[in-house]
Amino acid sequence: MFNLFKRVSIFGYGVISYLVFLATFIYSIGFVANLPFAPRTLDGDPRLPFWTALGIDVLLLGLFAVQHSLMARPAFKAWWTRWIPEAAERSTYVLFSSLALILLYSFWQPLGGEIWVIENRSGRLVMGAVFGFGWALVLYATLLINHFDLFGLRQVWLQLLGRPYTNLAFKVPGAYKLVRHPLYLGWFLCFWATPTMSAAHLLFAVLTSLYILAAIRLEERDLVRAHPEYAEYRRQVPMLLPRIGSRAKADGGREAA
Image 1 (cartoon, rainbow, N blue to C red):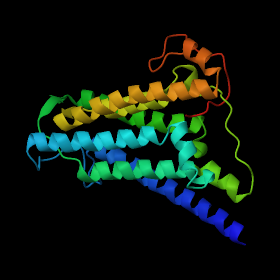
Image 2 (image 1 turned 30 degrees about the vertical axis):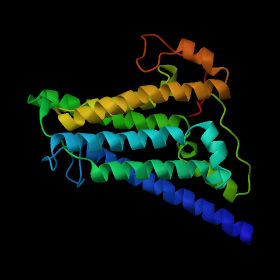
Image 3 (image 1 turned 90 degrees about the horizontal axis):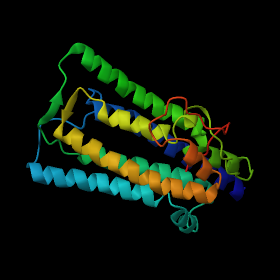
């Protein structure tokens, strides 16, 4: 009876963690695009002196970067699972990442100022379309590499059934034949495609872009260790920008880091 209660509890925890992520993901769209449904967004009237606000924003982005990278490393996972059930490790990572973003959204400080403003209606529509495509690409990329494993639901579902977890095989589906990181390409589009680039938005876009480039190096190092065939895949396929006529030879579904 206790074992059943434990399995159900871990499954419930995984579902709650996923729902928190889903709500955070939806809010992220409003935060970056300054949509009306989001009470706090990237832009707005400055509430603090410029340098104070800048320091707070850099600190918030740094906290997210440290959490998101540290908890994803195999060494940390090996230590972390000494204290929490292994089936809940990914859900915990997802939950902590969501909480780090909620913290960022809650305390983000607008900086004022405009770097560029596209006033032409067609130009604004193009930027909006690219922005929407970026978010769609992010979601599509997660589905290609097993969305439910990436966000911890597969792990807690298998333990609920009493079945052992098996790592996903390294395969290369869809957009992963064109670039190694379509998910990160989507994030670049999300953060840079805007008709009005404010100082706060530029800071957010620059620092998140630098973080993504650093995260790719860490992720690929781990992927090569876990899947030796990734080294050949890395030689064949560009990182973020597809080459015309370029396709990887592998087939199937690629595992996420």
